[in-house]
Amino acid sequence: MITLTDTAANKVKELLDAEGSSELALRVAVRPGGCSGFSYEMFFDGDIAADDEQATFGDANLVKVVVDPASAQLLQGATLDYKDGLEQSGFAITNPNASRTCGCGQSFS
Image (cartoon, rainbow, N blue to C red; front, top):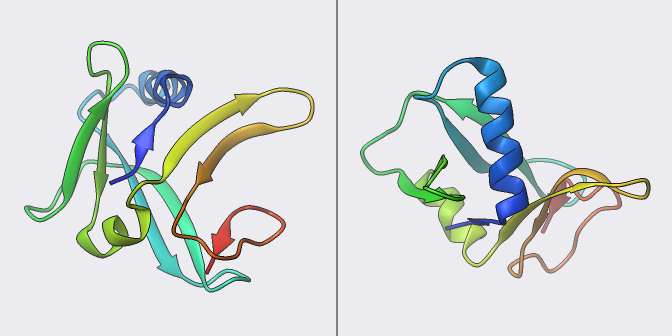
């Protein structure tokens, strides 16, 4: 299961508040595709399957994260962070299971 840093959890909570729906969870998934073989996908989802892995992150468990079983295997030990700076801005996944990543950081193998 992927882990969220406090910075990422706070940013996700901010985005959820902007959506106006506290029942939604952040779904993190791995899909075939991208320039390196697999690509990451993140979106808000209210449809949680019985076999989805779930975890909460942030102060007072602000954010629920769900991952399907197939993606969970590829995201084991991965971390989602959020950076807001001049050099780098946005969400970034650090995945110890990735043997190779592309230049954009959105796909891996």
